[in-house]
Length: 432
Image 1 (spheres, rainbow, N blue to C red):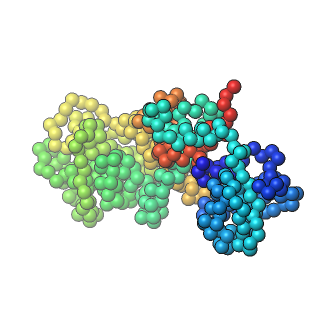
Image 2 (cartoon, one colour; image 1 turned 135 degrees about the horizontal axis):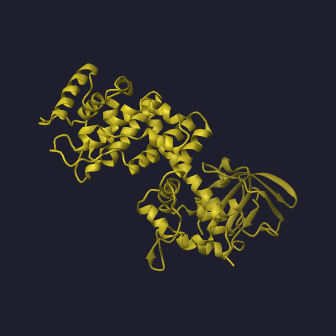
Image 3 (cartoon, rainbow, N blue to C red; image 1 turned 60 degrees about the vertical axis):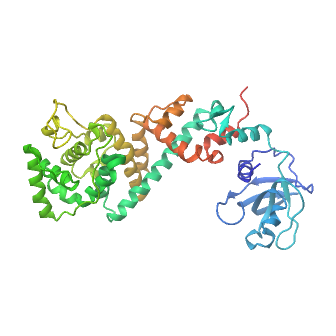
């Protein structure tokens, strides 16, 4: 038995509550177990109980053994002066409060189902039947109702979007809560991916959105500034197009006093479709097609509208090239791919809209951000594959985002008692 399990059992009353008595034989009725306290002080606050018919309102403290009360020196701590009940797993001696009054004690050792304890022990094991497990509860998933899964996934997606919103708010602080500027930096960060994301964001920071808005009808000017600030126009070129970009960049760098960006983009171990040169060309096309992007996104109600806004295809030079100084290749259109567009919606658009809903306390935008995830394809990675192997349906980005949050923040940390799926497994009786 662990104390967090004991708290879980008390909180949800997963023990036999019939004919309850304290260890000294007094009749006990639990009206409300109290609100769990995660700060300093008693474990549960504002509980309501009856002892021999008398109503008591106050706090509840839990320990594995009664004597831990004195070991933790609660009998000398003012924070514990309003304890109305001491709940223990095993009673090993009477204890007293700060005034010397004997505290009523409830022992739970003989009132908890052995099935619950066995399942909990299974959940805590990293290996089951000699094999490592993907998630602790995988052998019990058949016990979880679909309604519980749906409710828990909704909470996981909201948690994940809330966590991603922290990055949005950090950038908002730097832009003095300019939502257009913040979205521009976040879009650039996304376009750069894991390898070049921070450099792309630095490029975005170095070219304010208001400058780009002045040139929204000049694709060459936008592309030149992005390429130049990313350090891709420093070479000598043979082709006329990169030569023109270099000349354009020199002009705008001087005009706007653009500051050099720290760091440089990387091409190593990367497929041509993800080359930073091509991504910057696509980003330039996106800016060219969609000025004031945040205002437009905020007005969108359907995922089709979002995808239309994010459609971007670079100019003719990029039909034959992936980088600025290659000799060209066979003709191939290079728009933003479906997977990239959905990646932007998942990792940038939805979190920004969710953050907007948080900031302005508007549930409509938060719900819309979640609904958009339900309208696009699921992500495919080792985590989603693990859930699919367990026959858990992964039909949309809503599901995949929920699985990622659950696996990383609950399963990997064995937080089964805080997990809706773990709690459902622990409280359910075996199926007939």
